[in-house]
Amino acid sequence: MKPVGISALTICGIDELPEHGSRAVTHVLSLLDPNWPELTGFQGYGAHSRTTLHFHDIIDPAAGLILPTRQHVGEILGFGGQLAAEVRGDVERHLLAHCHMGISRSTAAMISLLAQMHPDEPEDRFFERVRQIRPQAWPNSLMIGYADDLLGREGRLVAALRRHYGVQLRQRPDFTVWMRRLARDRELDMAE
Image 1 (tube, one colour):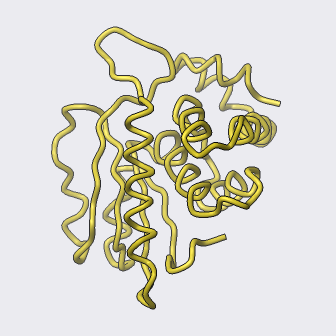
Image 2 (cartoon, one colour):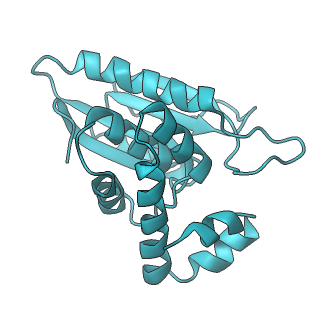
């Protein structure tokens, strides 16, 4: 599944950005911690449009940290709306979404964008597609909940996320230890 007019979808972490410089990336969505310094990984990229949002990869309030908000996800969908408006011609686009590790914020953003661009597709297909792109995907549940609401998915995107977590835990049982260390127990409890 690719949105019409988008020739490639990429999800990665900061350290992997230089690897994609020769891949004709046209649109970048950067999801970074607040006060993160400007990235140097784009030096090898050609001309591209880039949107950067700053918030932490957390799902519960924590002192000194910024939760993803409904507004942040609204801005991600705004980015998607602009991209969709641009792809009406015959020029192909390459969309790259990244966060620090390419596992949580960027995968949640890509699922949100796919759900926006394919309103009639079943929700599980978005998670399958993201697992193809980024097998270690563990989307931020707070972001998916906001996207579900903003896109009028009536809980279906969150239900698909539960199934996705179950798939990931069966395929990668080590995620349990990792997510507990990151205080993401609530997401582990969501898994079907």
